[in-house]
Image 1 (spheres, rainbow, N blue to C red):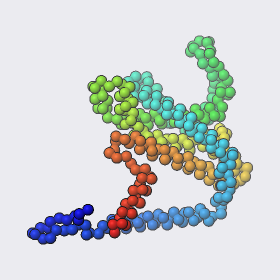
Image 2 (image 1 turned 30 degrees about the horizontal axis):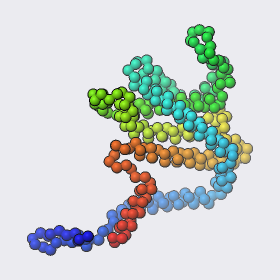
Image 3 (image 1 turned 180 degrees about the vertical axis):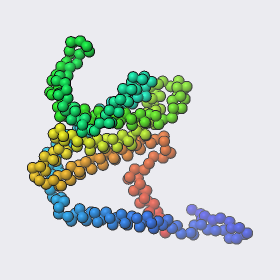
Image 4 (image 1 turned 120 degrees about the vertical axis):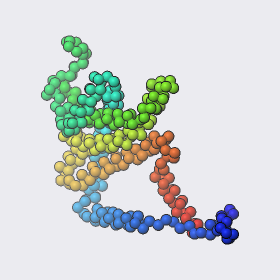
Length: 316
């Protein structure tokens, strides 16, 4: 490659820029802050490792125990079913809220108002004790004696059913507002332009509104899912054998309270970490069209950093 040069003023000899040394930018305060945080992390890590009262051996013993894993499976089951129910119903409620029908809009608003105003713990207990209010649940023609289906409420309303109803309906109230906000974030002028071009309503909704609304919906929706994972621990009041209740049963028998709580905590951390990774890549997918270049993945950032440092060292 020929040397880079520029003609100087007044007939002076040209400046040879290829002879300049490339010096990386220096950030002393950034390094000072990094060193301080690293020192604090080292102190916390040392305390966790050297303090015998954490009883890491007990944590390791129970972390993959069969009873704990069964509780973990039940927690994941509650999260998946209640999350699916919550977001599906929330989508319907969001469309009802945006409807021009006063009845549909009012019903949706009332649903969200009631379920967002009531503590989740209270909702779970109310559903579990529904048999006290209604002895039987039946399906038939209203205001007649015709019944197609009838069952004892106490038989139908098991611990699992009460947990799903409580978690799912509670989640639906919040999901409806998240989805409604995402839909309203899309510029209405785009819909008017699409309608003027003769694009069918279904295509306008699925190809124009939904992809853009997802960018606003996804961050908050994943936060709700992560909150739902941890919210399943409230189901312990129903004596349902999810992760937290299982851990409680074990430490009530062994009196190893702190190590068993750590077992549950670590499993919640694992689940939320996996969901955070999924969230990153899903948001990256829906960022197409909104940014000129997609955000780098962690591996791409690491590779770019190492390549840049190597290039600087070579040029020096």
